[in-house]
Length: 119
Image (cartoon, rainbow, N blue to C red; front, side, top):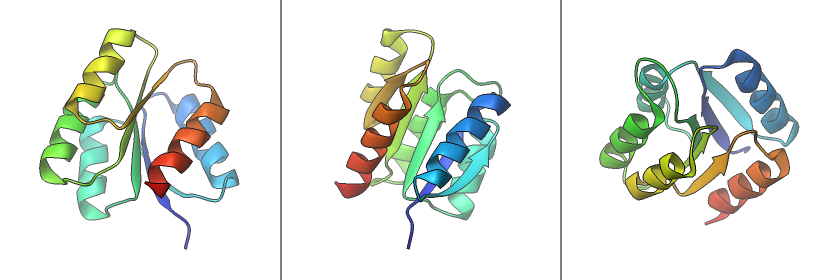
């Protein structure tokens, strides 16, 4: 059975690209346009891994990571951001297992996802 990944990303073009790359890599993908929607979706259908942007309206990625790691101890979250290394560092402190700077290196993203799903 393919691993399930939830993409939380407010930029439609980025979200569509990521979904396509992950589907092509054999994953089952669901998408959310903001942090609140992503949390609701995760609560309704837990997935193997969450890939979240940090800079989003309504509820940012740092808040999403905090909520997820508080409520679900073994949740696997990978954070991505085009902002600052400092923001990615914060994400790690809050429980993201991996961080990726934007623009994304898709090969690095796939390697990080594969690694997290295996460990």
